[in-house]
Length: 162
Image (cartoon, rainbow, N blue to C red):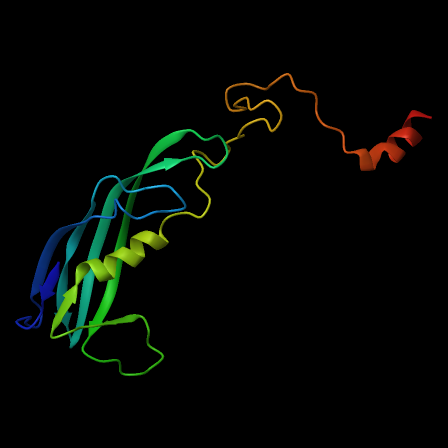
């Protein structure tokens, strides 16, 4: 959605509501956004600075990296961005530049949504995962597999047994 800001008056806000479709975005074979990401907020000019105050919300469809169970997780984050026609200094990369006195909300929100996806997806912080030998879900109960002994410790075990 392109938001025209030519008529933006000092102190007045331009509200927006939009949806961002990320359903085709592939995260290593996973499609985490089956429903559109809802975008809400407003753009306001205060003391010569144009600021976008927004929020994105959706429910991600995920699969745990440890136990493999599918689950949904709500994602709702605020986003505050400074908009300008030009950068005052080259090192100010936090400012989003306007093109023809307009901003594309999808270009602003898409990177923020993608960066909020965790690199390690877990159904819970204490997820025990699967047994590496039999594949049993260790969150439900422990399995009957005997713990594997590392052969590098055999020499020490022999000393203890003596």
